[in-house]
Length: 105
Image (tube, rainbow, N blue to C red; front, side):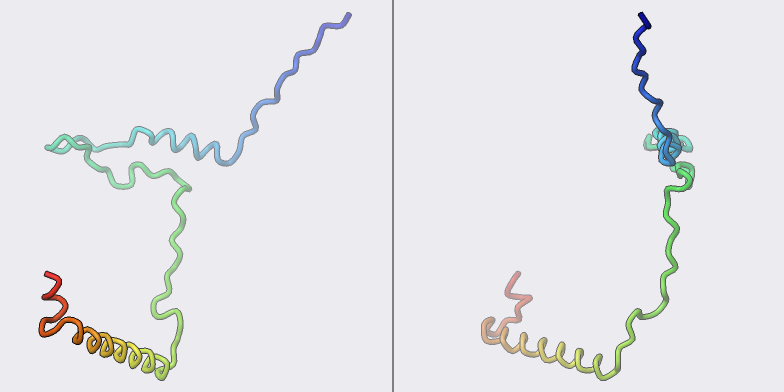
């Protein structure tokens, strides 16, 4: 009778992340540039970076993202000023002669 065949599991497939895992394991013990006088490890700039893990910084736009009409901005600021004035008037009736910041102390 033929010998029974063993079920051999296929070898694990490698993935692109395997290389990143190996690189990360290399920096598990971070590189240090000696010890400070207080016994702490001295930092070595960029010594513990793993290639390919840091995302490229997107170029930030300089300036406002949304252009607003001057009349819209003026209206918002006017509403803000009115709200502040209303809040101050409402606060005067409750606090008496002391400003709120002195009453809380």
